[in-house]
Figure 1 (cartoon, helix red, strand yellow):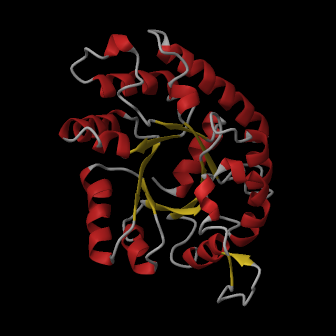
Figure 2: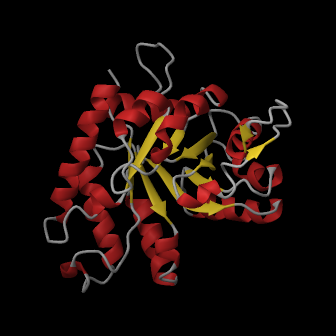
Length: 280
């Protein structure tokens, strides 16, 4: 999917909601457990209930990889079932030396037709570049994450090579450096919603890149703050927005009963309605 196509979907649906299909087989409703493929059936009903309210789906591959071949099959069927006007993200957090990254990119972009893969930048440019070499595909690079461990490395103060700024955080150096490896048409960054107060300074470093923002919902992130500080302010009549706000558990596990899909839709509608207000 191109940047233009993604922006068009945001404008048409008045939404920048990304639904996280982080489907844990132990948490899906009991009545689905006897289904031949319970994970796919669960995903299918969630997709049917939410596809007109969101512009993206994010599949956390760990939940599928943990089930072995059955999990990979359920993931592939899910990707194939998602409508083509949706932006499909493999939340795989890959990142290795060049030839290995190329194989990871082939796995998700060629064999499974994801639009984007989340990538860890710790090993540097040659671990990220292979994901940027596919036309109309995206690398979504970890920037500032919302987990407590982000303090261990991401928020260390470092001397920024390009700025010679001794007060720069490591994640700021990462954003600045990685943004030069690609462009706003093939490169996004992960910024956790619980770090919403940092989005204003992040936008000064990467003013035009899309941000994938997890952490709204169960993790306590504020959609209002994320939208206020993180949205691209280009002054146009049809703004590009520049945000994909991911909500997983709050939507897909809205109910443990047979009404889980309709309850998921209700929650998704609430997020979409709020987003529509911020897009005006």
